Image 1: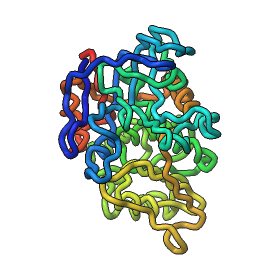
Image 2: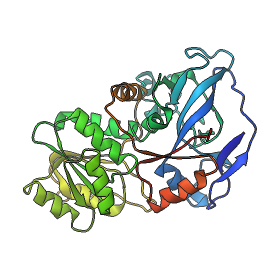
Image 3: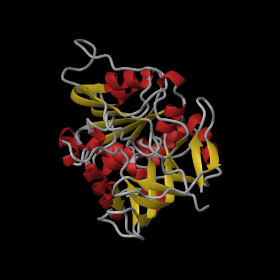
Length: 348
């Protein structure tokens, strides 16, 4: 079968022929119908050799959708022919966090050698993939896999980040979204669907700001050295109750901290290739402004997102590519010329 692999440190990913996998005990084999491409992949492939820990060759793709085609011995809870998406942050399944569906925060995954697909385990950028357990599959029914596969990360991560801050998003509140790409444009839609907050979007070009407006942002501001003062001017001198940074670079983190109001939440979601950190302490940010760095979301939250998708709440913008075109998609991701989420369709 064909797969997209990262094979050499610092090299571009390649489309290669590999052996079709066979599901082992308790595992499930999917025929991949769609696989999302993410900035996290670009971050991983940009790591120097001394910091790279994901193994080579690595079949990429931590956003996966597929059709169940084979069950390994003892695998139960899903039927052959079911259309599913894959919950990516696999855990041990038995610890306190996993028992709550929060496998994204499993404390034992690393010591047990458990890695997410595409981030250690073979991922979804292939014609077939093995999923380690039926519990990591969420049926999607008649939903389009291309439009739905980004929910596994580009939807789940912002949903988790927003959900924890919903009590602060009351009438008259403001949420600032920095970066309106794959995750950010979904966050704007989720904020509009789940809260009465005024949504202010920041990005680096007018076309990206126009895109943010088209998916529901009330106001847009150019993300530059004047962004913080322009946001506060827009808000009459006040700050925002929630700031979501989907870039994670030092300038955007600085902007996020500067526009956060008293008792606000600042959530840094994006990962920059350069070291970046929020400055926290007396006189460095608004009083009682909390800063968090979430990782993905829970299995239950992914199920909730699928329910929202069935209700037509979300319109995830995608550009589709074949497996052969996947390296080009990564080039465009790195260059910042994608609109929404890049999705690879192996059958193309």
